[in-house]
Image (cartoon, rainbow, N blue to C red):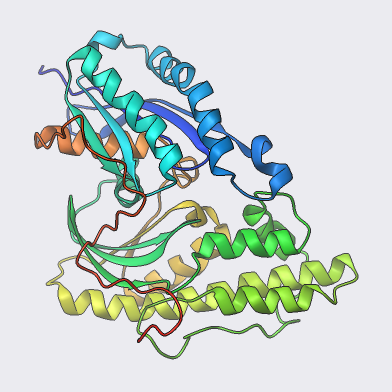
Length: 357
């Protein structure tokens, strides 16, 4: 029986300090031996959002302990680690630098390969942590910082089909929650409040709903929420607005995903149609349900990562590290942190006023 690679993954791109140890079984299926995530919610709660300097300080205070716990919980020894994979971007540079520097030092001390990982690629491959996943597949990546459709051809091979031209969907959820008086991070609470409300009470805008292909826009929706909340007086009105927001997002994603299906099929000779949804917003059960229904209608296989791997975590970073280790795709110890690091580096930058769709 040949020794299977043992990979340490480290994640610190925003406000979670995380470390994970993974390997694979004899069939080549990844096995997560440990996955430690330390949230900074209490650190940033009073500010209503992530404060980069405080986040970086918290990473520095915790990362040594988090990595050691991941190793201890894995039941393996430090000497058995074959490579270290750290998030190098995109993200907040002061936060990225903590995990990246720690990972480089750890790899150097062990004299093991170092692998710089794109955080978005971690999300893209996260379903591999619990599913057999063949290329190509269509990916909808929806998180606090990113919202895009990608044609995934293989490791490191991505073609963007559509993206948000302003705010990410996760940001729209969090800002809506803040306007409704929900403490940070409030995005996940929207779905809970929505269950108590009337989804048809407010007619909210759907920016670029009928144009722009499968590009997305959420800034106008967020502005409408701001206007309405100024006149809200009762809890029931809050519930109704949360329900209307949830329903509007579902309608946007349903239509834009259907357009993305067509574009994906035009670009690939498909034996099987696979649709993957990843990122923090993929944990929203109502969005999952709507997109699963669409997949059933269009004969797509739908794949979602487990809930615990939707948000930021190090298991997905170690997963990319495992894939790259097997291909001997290693990085030098001078690899920089990259605050902006798109998966499709050839795609046009679409953001801001005046964008041509």
